[in-house]
Image (tube, rainbow, N blue to C red; front, side, top):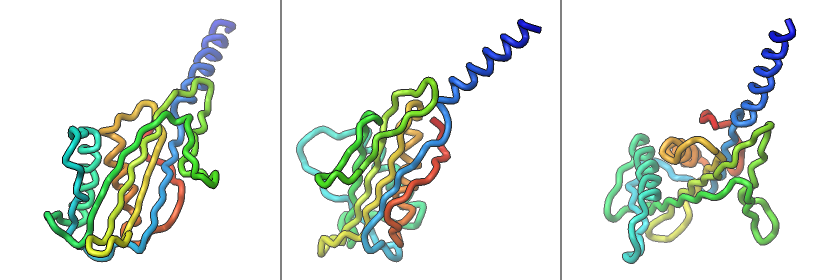
Length: 180
């Protein structure tokens, strides 16, 4: 009986320890602007001619374009709405604050016995009126992960950052379907 109890206790402790690397993943979402009504033609914001292409940013832009095309948007060389995309990655233990000490991106709270050292990934999308420069939509989505690849995460962040496109809802936090 003693051996069984010891084995069960060891398995229980192992399961508890492994639980520190899984669990709920929070998606931090922020959206603002007047919203984009209908399905206007879109154009990419012109990029600087200098510098090498960034394959990671290109994949993020493709994920955003794919999501928008699924929603019925089309792209053209010249269009009434200009789109820009940004992707940032940093150690999740670092917080980003404004000059007024407002948390722009909080540090990730690690939990469990063996918390992993992860990365915070943030996708930002901006849509402006090409003629006036008026901001129509700004959307960001970010998550902290230690085992999910960018190729898995970025399409989900694109979908989430674009969810409020017609009616921005401000700041909120949701539980992600992606596991750590």
